[in-house]
Length: 287
Image 1 (cartoon, rainbow, N blue to C red):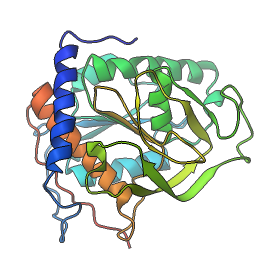
Image 2: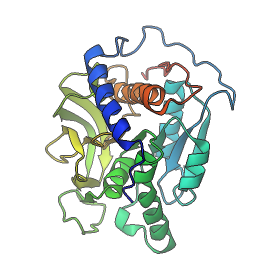
Image 3: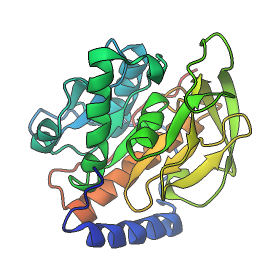
Image 4: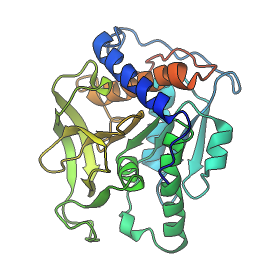
């Protein structure tokens, strides 16, 4: 499952260099332009797609669609392929050769993915490390997607304030509302942000134990493992909902923008992916 490609050592080196350079350069661009630029219309085939994977039992649910809309606007790339986790295979993703993959939020306890749905979920979790390490594709996991990354790489996930293997009623402990996170280390995902990061939370499950080697980038006292990263790949998990942000509280949007820049730079320098357009922050700020 934890396959390393032949160029894994080279990728590891260049990602370390990339992280250092981006932290030093601070991207040099403003967090948001004063006047958001309208997205360039990109025809299918002129730019490589990105992939949205819906993790809900009903496919790409409302949260998934919200993330898809926000990232399409912020990246300027509307060439998005939406896959249900039950139909996503390594072969399909390899053939598409996307700019990046986003794993969606979901609202069902993981312990309730049973029967054929549970088998399909496990099959998808098995290919996440291969997407990251064999295909070398940047991945962003949001809320349930963050937890899926942890599960895929050997971490533990369970209900807040419960044991790893419990399946509590979801009417109990939940983290909700705007929450302030503490940065635990420097990383280009935080460019333009202070040491305190405000983000909307809405989850019952949490990452209880980080996967081996993963870095904890931001934490919080109720649910500790809030933002995590693969040790040497641009694979990020965010427990909160960065897609839900406002002009007075833009931190979530900044996190997404920064991931897009990280992915773009990694694609150009390490993957040498062609047909990468300039990232344009075109999302209009909410009221």
